[in-house]
Every structure is written in structure tokens, then in C-alpha cells.
Image (cartoon, rainbow, N blue to C red; front, side, top):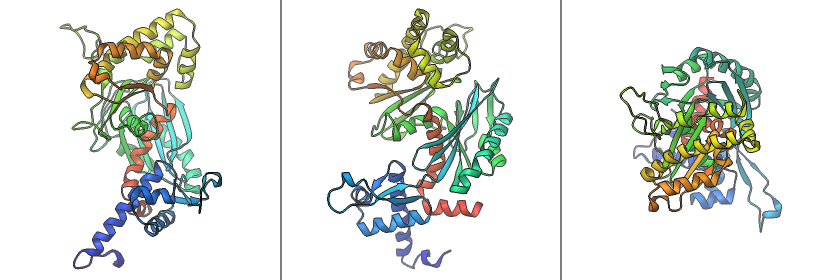
Length: 403
């Protein structure tokens, strides 16, 4: 133990160290969510200027922050330095899908620096996923380890992920069951790995940086090649359920097709609203989100318009249920759900309004995700940055010892 941090007999030094770590976390979290003038940090934290200066200096020494000159055209009086999260500290983010594995690099400032999309002819097995991901990471890490450091890897999986240890219990479209993805990828790359449900991390990313910024109660639904998932922010905090499986809106029934021989997926949202049907109608195959969005916006085919309407009608039933049960302030639609919503937003909003309890729908906004195709990369990176933001000095020391 460092003698300077050893607690005194009355515990004063120990309390002081805990306070310093807490304040360091507060300041870095604010910087992670956007650059701040040093004077803004003072007003937002309630700490005095000398304490903020000391905390910023410590974060700078840790390679987590730096100061720059503010915009002189927006200053009145003596300028206060601008404090920034250091984007040379990065996280690797990965999203496996049935048709591709996407790997991204995200800076501590929350900006996606690079994205690599590796298309696959069939859903990758876990072994294939680990191999492909580790090869891509190896090709990237030289650049980012030289300029700064890689903190770890975050994986956003379209399936049920146990929150306590990141075990993928069931990703039906990938056919992964009880797979220790974090453990396997950590062994292959040498980096610590965190794994979570894709829509849950997407909800958190939109809550911090996107359409849900400043919103305490929101629902996020993501539509991807592997189906539809959801994430919930309630009272400003992620609502994940006992084991982390909350938000599976894709498996909620939207059409009454109950029968003795019916399957659990029959009549579900992701059966009635799916990307594959849209691609087939548009004459497309394996494309990214931007290409699909553009194709839908530019299509003049009546059959495509009719399909979009049918999918929006089923989606409206699911959103009606969410509004009545969870009473959100904002519903954010991502992936291909954003694309079909943008094709006819008034139709979806009116159908949800007509089906919802009137008081529950009051002031509800339905909006497309703002982060677009960056969303899951940024969301997965938050898994990596969370322990760093919680205790910057301890995590930095632990990271240094592991190298």
C-alpha cells in the first residue's frame, strides 16, 4: 500500500481518498459525455476551482483528459480552459449478427473512430466469431496502442445475456446457447471483455448521447438482421430485470395466432416485422443500415409501401403495449425500425395514439435513433468505459499492471 493513501487511526485519510476518487469519477464522467469549460466543471460539481484544477491535472497525468483553449468568440471576461476526455484512450466494440461481424474503435470522448464490417455467408459460430474478431482486433491494436491505449472490449449480442458474468444464454438467430463469449474472447485477445444484450447497450447510448439525452424514462427498440430487441431506461437508470433479460419486445405477440401447435415465435413482433422481408421486397441482399434506409426512402414500388404499412401496424401494437405498461417519455427506434418509421412516421404515431390509454400517451414522443449505425458500437464501448469512469485511478493502475 502507498503510505500516502494508508488510513490514519481515525480514518480521516481513508475518507479523504474515497472523496477524491468519487470526485475524480464525477469529473471524468462529465468529460466523457462532452467537453467542458473548467468553470462549468466547478459549477456542475459544486467543487472549488483549486479542487477542480487538481482533479483535471490528475486525469491528465493518467492520460484520460487534456486541456485546450476555448473558443475566443464565445468568451466574456477571463477565458476558462476547455477540458476534454482524451480520445487516445479507446475501447474496442463488437456486434455479431447473422450476416456480419462489426468491430469498432471508440474514444473516451464517445466518438466512433473506426469501423470494420466483416460479412459472413452464414451466422458465425462462437468459435468463428472469436477467431474473426481477434484477427480484426490484432490488425487495429498496433495503431491505437502506439498512440494511446486500448482499455478493453465490449460485445453487443442480439440475445439473452446474463448480466452478472456476460454468459450468452440464448441468441436464437446466431444459435448460440450458454456460450462464455467474454471468457473466450479475453483468452484470444488478452484484453478484458464485457458482453451484454445489444438493445440494452443501444438504449444506454441513446440515453447518454442521442435522442434520449436528458430523458429519464425511455424505451429503445432495435431492429437488426437477428430480429428485434429492446432496452429500457427507467428513472434515469437501465432496467434490465433480475438476470438481465428485460426488454425482449421482439418476442411479444402482436397477432393473435394461438393454437395448440403454435410455437413461441408465432405471431411475435419480430416474425411480423423483419428486415429479411424488406430486403426481399427491395431486391436487396446483405446490406448495411444506411443502404437499406436509402432504398426505402427512394422506393416508389406500391408493394414496398404496403409491406412497410403492415410492419408499422404490427409495430404499433407492440408500442401500444409498451406505452400502457411502462409510461415512457420517449420511444426511440433504431436499425431498420428507424427506416420504416421514417418512411411513414405519421401513420405509426397515429396508430399508437389510437390504441393507447389516453393519459399514458400524453407527451410521448416516438423518434428515430440519432446515433444511427454508430449506436451499437458506442453502446458496447460503454461496457468497457464503465469501470474506468467508476474509479479512474484504480482502473488505470490495474490496467497498467496487466500489461
